[in-house]
Length: 481
Image (cartoon, rainbow, N blue to C red; front, top):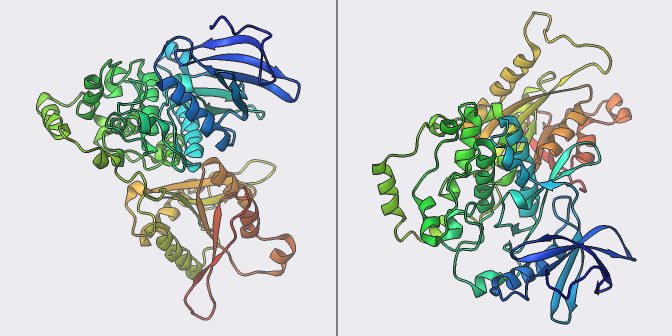
């Protein structure tokens, strides 16, 4: 701690209360201010110790980015300035602790690893939607914060290595070496690519691998040569270290750690979706790997990695975001014309986004009071019957299995079930059908009207035209968030 920074000292109108952390790049102080309520931290870069310029540039990056960010997954920006030759940045102090202490208890229960991963992926999805790639995801930068409703969320911290798509990349302008934390840095970052959001998915995969197995997949390399090994050397399959890890979790972890960004999940939202719905994960040969690749295969990869171009690994980093699309299907009151119109609309929407995933959902209505039987009048399981019906409904769609999932929602209120599912799973575009307007619907309001008003995402409502005319979707306005 620099000697000239003492408790009680004032910087920019903020009073230094006590130091709470001293890292290699900066010190953090708890501060107070008569005009700002709530717990706050002041971040001060280490400029008095003779360290390199990179930490000063990183601090300027964070000071530039943080005011442009918003939402529950980033600290709230308060103020920034300079006091003489001392720059400073004040932000909200995030409640809770980072994921770093959890590593001491690793391996964790697989379900807990998946739950933490889903929370982190949701936070990354929110960040990426703001056109920012974090580029330094690791346990100490993932804060686990309790929410007012008794749940949890992840708050991302430390944006010193981050890049905003529409702001200058100060780090790239001044440095030409890999920037990141050695165990977590993605292969494309090693080659200098700083524009791909999927780099954050690789780093999150390293974090989840460590939580699930107690080991880092690529160790802790101390040189650029060591970092480049991840271009050709695959990690030990998690189930070879901890046999209790389920196949679906190994599939997800190894997909996150693919060298080629195109082989990972297209978006953080899709990764979160898989972690929340393990029964829907499409298993490949990754799920059953028991050992690393042999020497011959590793040598082939090494040869391929020689002279590998950075723009090749960049892949489709600047391509349109691969959305999560939801279609709500009414199986109980199925109208053939409406179903066909819905199918055609979904097909057109999915066709415009090659990386899109389609979640097919139907609502099994339950009683508000009392118990519902799982069996219908013929003794068949109602839930399974609906799943079969959803699969039948999608047979007319030209989509591979790995881009389809099926969900039976149980609720006494159809609209509430659809809205809740769309919010929980960060659905980008919701498609649903609407039947004709009856007197009761006009009086009480329709399901589609409520969904349009409250879903929080883009909603397309489809109607079937009467008289055998071609069916057409009726565009609905995007609800306010």
